[in-house]
Amino acid sequence: MNKYRKKIKHLRATFLQFANDRSIPGHWPEFLEEDFDFIEDLEIRSNITPLQMRHCNKLYRKYRNV
Image 1 (spheres, rainbow, N blue to C red):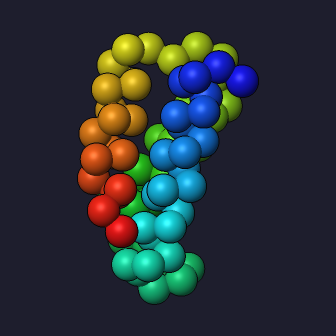
Image 2: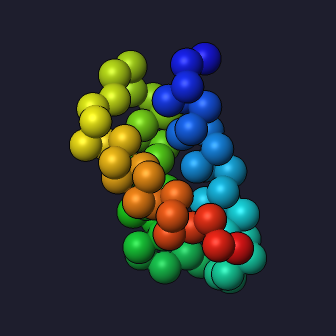
Image 3: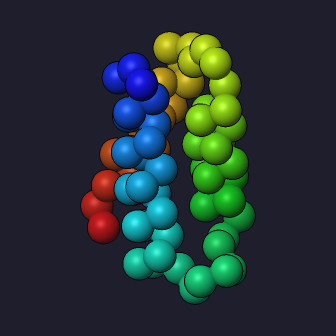
C-alpha cells in the first residue's frame, strides 16, 4: 500500500468518526454523502491525480476536528 492509499484510508476513518459523532446514524446530510462518495471512489481508482489529492487534504482539514 503506497502512501497515498494510506492517506485515503486514514481520511475515510476520520470522516466516519466525524459522521458518527456529529450526525444521526443512517441519516447523513447531503454534503456528507457527497464527500463519502468521493472518498469511496478514490479507494477504487488505480490512479489519483494531484487535484484529487488536494481535495482529500481539504476534506481532511474539514473533518479532523472531531
